[in-house]
Length: 407
Image 1 (cartoon, rainbow, N blue to C red):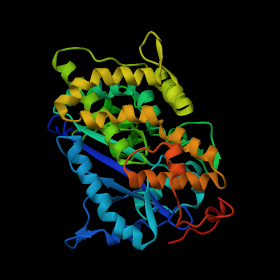
Image 2 (spheres, rainbow, N blue to C red):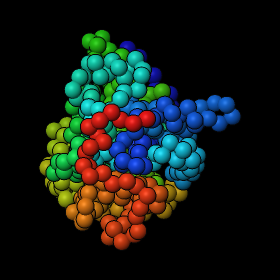
Image 3 (cartoon, rainbow, N blue to C red):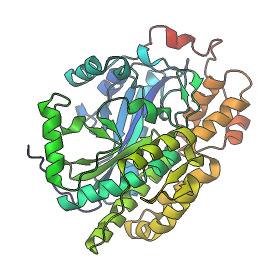
């Protein structure tokens, strides 16, 4: 089976941000994607930067393909600003995080397409649990032979990237003890999770042929690895990030990916062999970062040397700073330092819940809504000091999730 890779201009970039549709009155999810997208019309056509996703409680905001993170984020911000009056009419807020703190996964409605219906039919219980949100970053690659080495090197950093973005500690109303429960749930799909490592493109083609012939997937786009090639777009796609709750974090995650791919490309140009880790180390790093977040000790080479995730991210930033200057994303990359200073999203959510005087999970949703409006991470103490109001508080934090979801 031929898997044609269509090269893209080197280190062009595109961003995809999956957002929750949250009811302003109940803080629960709303199954309103069709209503929102039907309203998102420009010059008589559907907005090109607003897409459907698997669940009707989700819209995806995407950028065009650009040369810089800043240009992509300009697209993202314009699109969010365009959507807000439309969602306000429906009494809905756009919210970001790896999952919703108290919504019941089994009560969410699936977008009415053959593709998603087949996914749920095949995967049953776990397919119905996919109440998950992420940030995906595409970076253009100009030569097919670079793609698999770059993918393998990015896989070495999956633990670090997951740790800095982890934003799903609470699942269906319970603190799971994980920084990223999204990572644990998503890998239950048979083609999701850590990428397979291939050294030759022909071996990847053989893998895809086997998967299609045996009915595992209908096409390559159903292989949902944390890092994967995107042959049609000519990119390497980084899908490991949990959903971000604000624009600063989206930009930081995009800058990390942008710089890492360009660094790998430069090293390949110099004839260097890129580093890689065995699959079992990559899998262990993914679990450790999902469980412990920034406090995880991660395996960083084939000899088994380990380092704390925070230390590894600081080391990575030093390596990437010159690349960021060349790519014009130094400001966006500095957002990683801001996240480390304020705390990752899972830490911020837990701090808000711990300090709550009434309804912890409602307060977490309010916090996520506030970060979305602020376009930056908020210190929990800053949020808790601020006056709040305008949202009805439920006596039972899970009451709305047990009934029929409102549209």
